[in-house]
Image 1 (cartoon, rainbow, N blue to C red):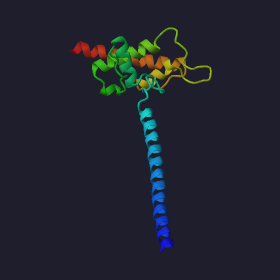
Image 2 (image 1 turned 120 degrees about the vertical axis):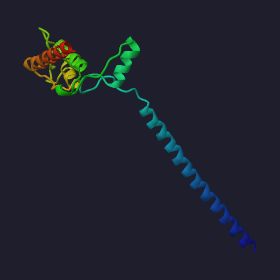
Image 3 (image 1 turned 180 degrees about the vertical axis):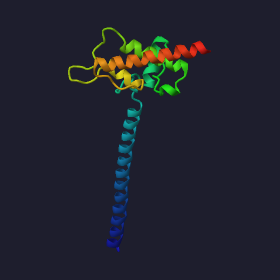
Amino acid sequence: MASKAKKSAKKSTAKKTAKKTTKKRVGRKRAAHKKTAKKSSRKKARKAPEKDPRGGLTAAGRRAFAKKDGSHLKPGVMKKASEMTPSDMRRKGSWAVRFYGRKKLPPLVDANGKPTRHALSAHAWGEPVPRTVAAARKIAAEGERLLERYRRTKKRA
């Protein structure tokens, strides 16, 4: 009888140890999961980029300027000329003339042939990114036309 009691005792301890090891494994997996969850939440907490890689500022960049300088920057006007309000015409026209109507333009492409931030700003306003001075002057001429159209609408009112 003693041998039967020993066998049953061994079985019960074997079951207990088996359960403990599985619990430990599960516990480890959960702990590992918690660590990865913390890492992913860190990624979400990263600061949003302030400069759009395609040109102009992101919404976060405009907020940062507002916080730093107290300025109120608006995104560029990307509407078609037929859909623009007079204030849109004035904003986009003055931007185009100010940026691309200068006598001496800053570089439009860098040494590697990639467009500079100055050239990329055209994308933020819905214009093609100029690679040559002639393309930049074309944007400036469009800006002049928008400003003239704005002046005509202002005279009517």
